[in-house]
Length: 119
Ligand SMILES: [Zn+2]
Image (cartoon, rainbow, N blue to C red; front, side, top):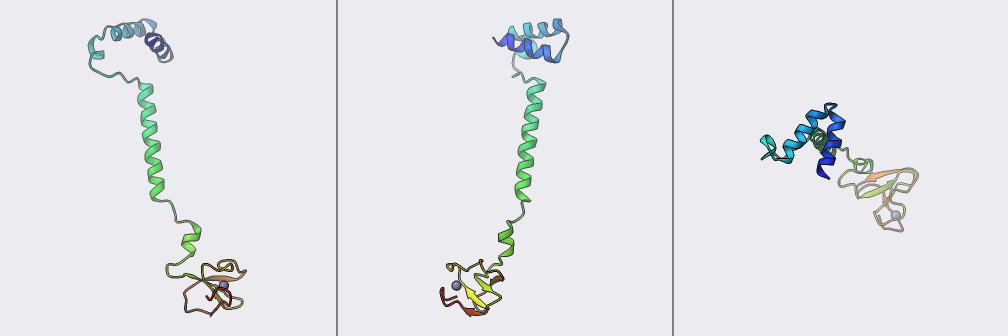
C-alpha cells in the first residue's frame, strides 16, 4: 500500500520512472539517507509552509484588529445616554438608553434625570 502511494506521488512529480522506482526500492530497504531521515516530500513541506504562513497571518490580523464600532463610540466613564432633543439622561437599564433618535453617551452630571429610570 505504502509503495503504491509513493509510486503515485513520484509519477506526479517525476516522469523518470526508473529514478522513481530506484528511490522506492532504496526506501523499502531503508538504505542511505532513508535510514534515519523521516522522509518529507517537497509537496508535504510546501503544505506545511503554507499552513504556517496562514497561521502567522491570522495571528497578525488579530493584533491589529480595530475596536468594534460600538466600543470606539462609547467613551470610558460615559455610563449614561443623553437624549439631546429632550435633555433627558438615561441609565443603562432604561429602555431609552441608546435608543432615542437624537442622543449621545454622557456622564451622570449632564442633562436632567429620566422620570422612568432615574437617570
Ligand atoms: Zn430613562
